[in-house]
Image (cartoon, rainbow, N blue to C red; front, side):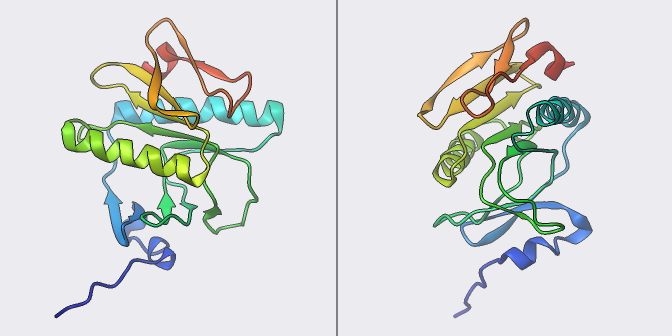
Amino acid sequence: MSTKIRATIEDLYHVPENGKAEIVNGELVRMPPTGGGPGRSGGEIYVSLREYERRTKSGYAFPDNVGFIVDLPNRQSFSPDAAFYVGELRGGKFLEGAPIFAVEVRSEGDYGPAMEREMAQKRADYFSAGTQVVWDVDVLKEKVVRVYRAGDPANSTVYGRGEVAEAEPALPGWGLAVDDILA
């Protein structure tokens, strides 16, 4: 009988090729690199969050591949595509706790019933860890931003072309034109 060894935070620091991963259900879950469209969209969101950080001095904007350490029964970390965090910076260490705002930009493989269940579970985990708002950004198929809030996690506000997506109550006064995200 073999016993599976649970992944640790230390394992995240040693993901081969400095890749992206999260710890879910005790396992290191590696994430493939994204394509150009989703990557650019995540970058556009980060740039806007960075401007919000500079203007409000209310926290820190982070791009893709930053680790957030959490303590949930089924999850020990997140690595969103963009995020806003109000905790303490720890030098080169991963951040302790969940971001108040997290962005998940869909890649080619993020579609279908199984992925919808996985993404819904991840949003539930974000909210359980303290995240206030999660964006589900679909730049490849429906071309919308779905905004989920901790206060009503089963329902989203959907923003499309010609609209400005927001992240209330996590980021008061901040918003980003969907057209800029989809460009």
